Structure formats: structure tokens, C-alpha cells
Image (cartoon, rainbow, N blue to C red):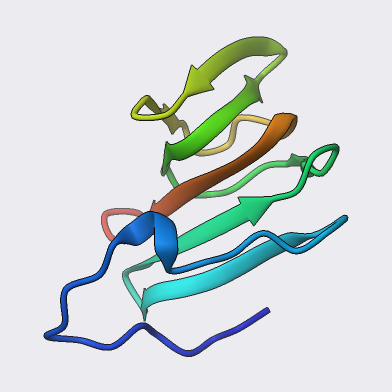
Length: 112
């Protein structure tokens, strides 16, 4: 996983920050701070994320394609432009629906 941030003070087309890699999930960090982070991710067809639980709220936005985000057993079908907040402490996973890209924003402040 790449830790470096994207160039600051430079305009970016978010969907072009990251490319698809066959049979892979690729993650690029946009910002990484002690209070949270923003990452852009690409998923090749058939690739997803296994179930996990985070101690922090997470904002997920689909920026290209379609995906199913399952939160506490409930399926949410999202497509380009749609987003969802994954609540802290809720088990969740991402199921692919073809290739897709998304932005994940994790906010850590307020949980001290």
C-alpha cells in the first residue's frame, strides 16, 4: 500500500489518481493525518474487501462503476456519484459489481 500523499496545491481529477490493476485492489492515500485519512481505491472485477469493523465512522463514495457495501448484514447498492456513511463499530465489507473506484474518508477526531 502506498503511503505518500498526492501533490498539494495542484488540481486533480480524482478518478484519474488511480488506475486499475488486473486481479487487484489498489489504494492511494490522498491525505493521512492523525485525525483521519482520505484514500482513493480501485477494484478490478471480482475483487472486494473482506469483512472488518472500524472504531471510526467512514464515508465511502463511488466515483466510477458500481459496488455493494454490506453494513451489519444489510446490502447497499451504490453507483457512480453515490455515497454512504459506514458507522463506527458496524461490521462491513465491499462486494464488487464489475470494476469500480471509490474514495474512503475516515474521521478519527471526536473519539478520544
